Image 1 (cartoon, rainbow, N blue to C red):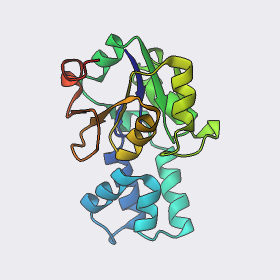
Image 2: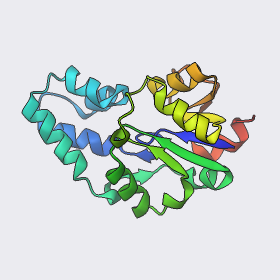
Image 3: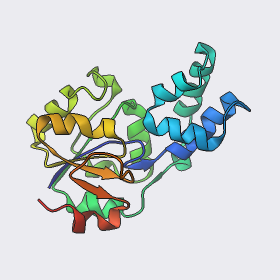
Length: 187
């Protein structure tokens, strides 16, 4: 199986740490639950939703970029799916340096054959250009993401989709954890 993965909230549980960074910058203007819900839509959506000033945005991005890899964890059961797949690739809006730093810290680097990051200058999701690039190179069977925006480009290209921890997303498969992945996703 050839799998295309989103990074934040799909491979690595980054949203709790991102929520803390936002909370630190926003101080008393928002609850952690509210921040988390908005971040799950997108990072840029949360910035707009909370009407952050340019200075606040710069500070929250600085905090996120300086997070230590030990502050975030891969989701339980992930490594078993990565081992079972023939090919794993990543498409993320995160920068390559931080993706590689986190994957390296958690011993996951060797599982990935390729990745597209914000450094590669593809248009942002839901544009399908980066997915098309990875699909043409690796013949992707399933795209996995935690948000609708992660799945839309794959759907546009006719690639099967798997929604992780999001039953509201329109997807071919829905899983709440990676222990169920291999039993649920049948091609």
